[in-house]
Amino acid sequence: MRIFITLILLITSLAVTAQARKQPLGRTERVCNVNDLLPTNIEISGSTQGLAIHGNYAFSMHDKGQCVIIDLKKLCFVNTFHVEGNTGHCNNASFGTEYYSKESQFPLFYVSECRGDRTCYVNDITTTGSRLVQKIFYAGDEISGPCDWAVDAKKKLLYMYCTIDEVRTLMWFRLPRLIDSNEQNEVHLYLKDALGSIHAGDIKIPQGSHVYNNYIFLPEGVPSRGTALNVINRHSAKPLMHIDLTDTGIEPEGVATRKRWLYLSFHTPAQPRHNIIYRFRIR
Image 1 (cartoon, rainbow, N blue to C red):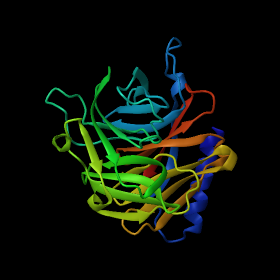
Image 2 (cartoon, helix red, strand yellow; image 1 turned 45 degrees about the vertical axis):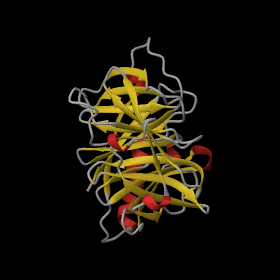
Image 3 (tube, one colour; image 1 turned 30 degrees about the vertical axis):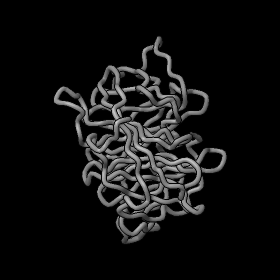
Image 4 (cartoon, rainbow, N blue to C red; image 1 turned 180 degrees about the horizontal axis):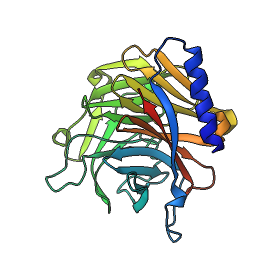
């Protein structure tokens, strides 16, 4: 309740200071603490990271590759397993549009490794498991530090969220198809393949990323150094909202949309079962 009231006050104050300017996000609601939905015998390891939603199902990724599936309509636990091939940080997750086969339950599932080779792992996923079907790499040497990948399924674009010359940057590419893979089921992207790029703004510690219509949603920070949710225009990079989340005391991570709601997943330090999810109304 404390976090809910805090977020309501933050959004209300932003609406007042914005005067006549229309804000992209409206009221907020607490969806759940995933711990309340989990059977007592289910073990969750690794901190909460990326979040992706398809239909009524939320796929919450954890560090080292565990995936927890929640039914958002029934608010119940569905299943958990480790995605094939990815033992990285799993900082971001999203669904594309292409299906691996006619039997596939969901479109291809894209999960960022984040560190190391900065790989995007593409999986054919179900509610009972997954198999790795493609890896996407950025082969240029322009970026430094970690990078994430986010799919804009509507426009069939793949966004790379990275740091170039110490500036947080979003670069986008045509979303590779499975037939674009080489013999090792890999796709290697270069600067020449980029369709465009924008600066993401003054973001100290990047977390997840999500593209929806004309908006890009970028959570940032850790509780000890301040946390926030940023909303920028996908074309101009103009900042539209900056919601300070520091008083929540927990770390914003994955972000996804469903039925004109923006879902934001929080990581509770040292308590991987306590994945708290809120949602904001998209205007």
